[in-house]
Each structure stands twice: as C-alpha cells, then as structure tokens.
Length: 227
Ligand code: DC
Image (cartoon, rainbow, N blue to C red):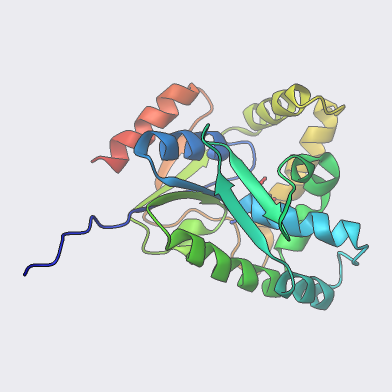
C-alpha cells in the first residue's frame, strides 16, 4: 500500500528592524495561507517581563541565561490571527507590549545563552506546522533553509511614525522623541550584537515598505510565496 502524500511543511521567514511592519505582515500572510504565526520577538519580550518582575540584573548574562532555562514560554494563535503569549502558563500578551519591556528587551535578547534557549524553542514551534516566523535572525540563524525569506525595511522616519501610532492606539503616553530614542537604541543593539545580529540573509527578498500600504506588502509577500 502506498503511503499517503503529506504536503511539505513550509517555513516563511520575515526579518527586519522594529517598525518595518513585520508583525502585521507576518500575521496577515499566515492568516491568508492558514499557517501558524510565530512572533519570536514576543518570546524575548516575555522573558524580559519575567526578568523585570524578578528584579534580575539585566546586565548579568549568567542570571538571564539561568532564567531562560527555567522559563516556559508558549505561543498560541487566536482565531483572529493575533497571538496569545503564555509565560509560565500566564497570559502576558498585553503586558509584554509595555514601553518598560520595549526599553530592556534588546539587552536581554543580546545574551548568547538566552538566544540559545529561544533558538531551541523557535525550531520546535516551527516544526509543528507550516508557519510564518517574524524576528531578526530567522532567515540567517533559526531557519537558514526556510522556503521563503523576506527582509522588510522602511525609512527611519516611517518606522518611528508607525510605532508611535501603534502605541497611541494602545493608549501609551509616549512622545515621538521617546519612540525615536527607543528605535535608535534597539537598532544599534540588535544589529551590532555578536550573537545572531539583525542582518538580511543573502537569499532574502528585500522589501522597502516605506511607501507601500499594508495590502501592497501582503500581496508582494504572497506573490513570492506562491511563486
Ligand atoms: O519584534 P519586537 O520589537 O517585538 O522584538 C523585540 C526585541 O527582541 C527586539 O528589539 C530584538 C529582539 N529579537 C531578536 O533579537 N531576535 C528575534 N528573532 C526577535 C526579536
């Protein structure tokens, strides 16, 4: 008897700097394709939340690594395509978006031991089903053999105004100056760290989203996915 043909699981990597539109696009593409959406930034954010709650010294790599080893992080897809983030079984989906977390997350994410733990988890999540993952190192480190890789980028000014709009919608009291400072700081840390820095994979498709609508970016990505 011949064995049933199983469709191949597809991995789509979406990398880029903060504010380039990765999470919006990755979520919408996943929804359209009926794939899982895996927000890897949310995982670093969840660990940062735990570190701050436990008053772990953010400059202490050994303590952060120990914390990462003793933390359970799960991601679930809600029916509307958004993601539920569970930190040791607690739903922290909203808490991890607070400016306090955003301020420290890049310092937590630059720790090699932390990244090692997240890498295992991300590969395990990615093995579950066809999925779209967004992050900084998906196409370069986490899934270097991904079926499609995208690097979403946008001019700094556009990234600042998108992030500011998003935060205002979430009723966070932040100024454009605060957002500028935060993005600059995170861009520097994320792209200059020794371990898995933010970088376009050689074989990633570069999309400058500065002057594109969300729909145009989604269609561009889907066009390449179905290519
Ligand atoms: O995408 P985001 O803003 O939620 O990501 C939060 C931080 O996590 C970001 O500043 C860098 C880090 N990050 C990372 O280093 N690697 C990833 N794959 C995803 C996020």
